[in-house]
Image (cartoon, rainbow, N blue to C red):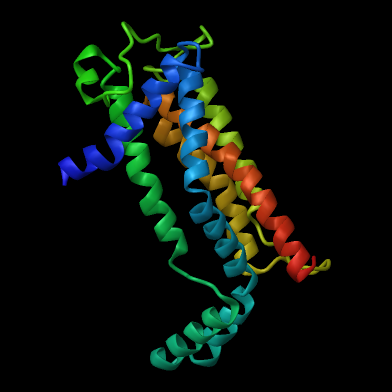
Length: 236
């Protein structure tokens, strides 16, 4: 399992990062991380785009889900069958969020191991033949932030970006009525998520926080595109 992780996640990520560091990032590790993160998100764009769309649709059909749960409260089998029929009717996959998590975790873990190694010379044996090894690695981002150490600036920026991305991902009930239960939960999570981000990244190298910051900013743009598409299809 460790070998597969190294071959599928660690080595490709390490090589991409070093390649960007040696070329267009002007030997700035922070810029190399930003470029690497953007490349990863572009490659995985179809998965995350579909996942963002699925989450919005799940919120949209929550009133119908609740109605089915109430109607078949005492019959688990009928409740499951009705829910599956509802998901199929609206093209919703209730497990899409789990898939996104499974994709995201190993990438973040690989980033952590790359940064933890310090990109030292002992790790350059993992470079592909066409990627040149740097003589040394400057871990300062824009000459200000040491990416091997925690940074409260990066953490707060990452938490703020996650907050705004989460707010964009809330399906708002049409009209001036009371927000649905799903909308209330999504609103609460938009505050909880950033707090969890601060707690998790507080003691980690700021390189991981920078990766999460860029990921959240990318997700904001992606969520905006999803919202515009759904608005055109379903209206306000």
